[in-house]
Structure formats: structure tokens, C-alpha cells
Length: 143
Image (cartoon, rainbow, N blue to C red; front, top):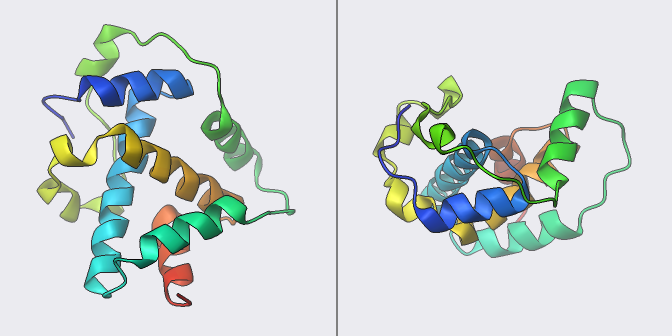
């Protein structure tokens, strides 16, 4: 997937978290799809509760090595410099996002606040051994 313009504020937030642009875009796009799913279920107000739950949830179990490495990346707090060429590269997104992801307005979705929300949900989801969408929908059912 190619995104014509990735907003500067989003790029700065990505660098501040030490993440790659591809990772930040992918999890933020998934958050947008989760937001739509919650709206379809008439649980729009549940996103804030879901975020609070995800922030407070503690996981004790081990995750597989590749997931553990990914989880460490999501918790990274050291800023990094971004190579300008990174902004030109296509973004790989999971096939499960298609075709819905094509209708996402990236100028509205790719903002620092949404990246923060996406990180909260993705950390909780990976810790639980789920995708963000699975984690959100399972917990939304209980909201």
C-alpha cells in the first residue's frame, strides 16, 4: 500500500517512539478499522473504556520469541532518526485489512493521538496473543 503523504506530526511521533514508519502506519490503520468495527457494533463510546482496560491490564504469560521481540519494539522509548527514504517505501499491511483499509482517510487517521491509542491496544493485544482487532472485539463484547 502506498500512502502519498504521511503527516509530519505523525512522522515525528513515530521517531519519538523509536518505531519504523511502516509499523506505526500499520497499527494506526488497524486502530481505524477497530474504531469502525466498534461503531458498527454501536460501541463507539467503548473505545475509551477499552483503552483504559488495555492500559491497566497486566499479562504474566510468556509470548513466542518473535512476538516478544515485537513487543519490546512497541515498548521502545528511545527516539530514532528516520531515513527520508523510509517515507517513500510502500507500507505492507496484512491482507485481513483489505479491502476496508482502502477507504481509510490517512490524513485523518495518521495523527499522533491515534498512534498513542494504537500502541496501547497493540501492546495489550500482542501480550494476550491476539491481533488488535481480535483483542478489541473480544473485550468490546463485555463493555
